[in-house]
Amino acid sequence: MNHTQHMKDFVSAKWDDDIIPQLETYIKIPAKSPAFDAQWEQHGYMAEAMALIETWVRRQPIPGMIVEKIQLPGRTPLLFLEIPGQGEDCILLYGHMDKQPEMHGWANDLGPWKPVIADDKLYGRGGADDGYAVFASLTAIMALHERGIAHARCVVLIEGCEESGSYDLPFYMSYLADRIGQPSLVVCLDSGCGNYDQLWVTTSLRGLAGGTLRVKVLEEGVHSGDASGIVPSSFRILRQLLSRIEDERTGKIIPEIFYVDIPSERMQQAKNTAAILGQDSYSRFPWAGNTRPMLDDTTELLLNRTWRPTLSVTGAEGFPSLGNAGNVLRPETALKLSIRIPPMLDAERASKALKEMLERDPPYGARVEFEAETAASGWAAPPTKNWLQATLDEASSTHFGPSSAAMGEGGTIPFMGMLSERFPNAQFMISGLLGPKSNAHGPNEFLHIPTGKKLTAAVADVIAKHYQRAGDDV
Image (spheres, rainbow, N blue to C red):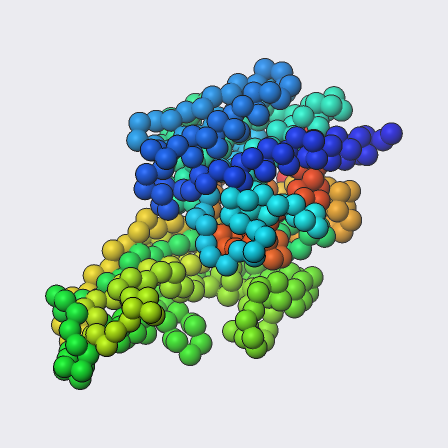
């Protein structure tokens, strides 16, 4: 049996016999991120999920591995792993174990905390986003040990508040700075893939600015027949305020402060991705009725998703349910706003500008308040060195078939911008399992099992080549 087939068999068996059962148990635990469970510590689900992962890690036969669960006062837990290697270099591997909330709309036979395997997919919240990361990372390293292949020292970090903006992570990074060192390669398994046919790497991530916008016109609700036409509607005022930010006809964000110049190589990358994916770049969404994309040009859609700002209203307060909606002019309305901002745009600057634009000169003198949430800047990858690009292409060809592909992602991983600042000379392999219809954060989220196996083997190849690259580090 050749080395490649041995690796594939090892990884596949590890997933089937060990990783998938662990993920099934993990999915059952409602370990929601602190932003969605203010009493996360009292509920104990975060501790339960971390204990599951730590117990599994300690069972793995990796010589010399250091395993430490760290929980600084008032902070979410973090799992720190250190695996000895050859030479002075270091690789940092990252994932998280906190989850998004339940979300409505799961199919009748599915549920957020109910693991179900069907058609090579493992359904349930958090499996692909990204409970699998620690299991895949250690399996990749064990696959090298099985074949006697050397690698550099590896540090694995699994955090517990990524879905809340990773606000605890800077404290842990500072606390562990001397133990981590200066990695020359960062592997992050918390991203997506354009399809399940090849290895995808992420070259940029959008940032995030947002918060809660409240408009209050009365101290209490009054009869609409008595007050409408005299008292302005809080909802109408909200509509006016949102029009300062967004053109409601096109979805285009109006203020120029929310834009950056898109690098020419990323423009070309979007064209290449559009050529690979075609209509699959948007047909993967669960469209209702005859709804169609915002534009006809696939390249422009991809740039909208990765390098241009977009507003989403993600929550509302002040509305009774339809069954309880009487003829009352409501006293106030609140909306949760989320603006995805381009890579390279400072999130704090964007957040301050958003607050100023929404609160200035309130219509009718209404009470308008915008409570900004923690802002997160995006990330843009440094130029990929020749050795890494060649390795990604070879790993994709070996384990998937076609060469690797690259694209920007529309989501936010605050950790990446933090790492770029701390490790400016590092290379990055940002990848993941969130592909077509996997629906991270939404109903019917799933992990595509065959891609999980292939990605794990590809990570092993990258770790091996990272050590072997001496003299080819360009």
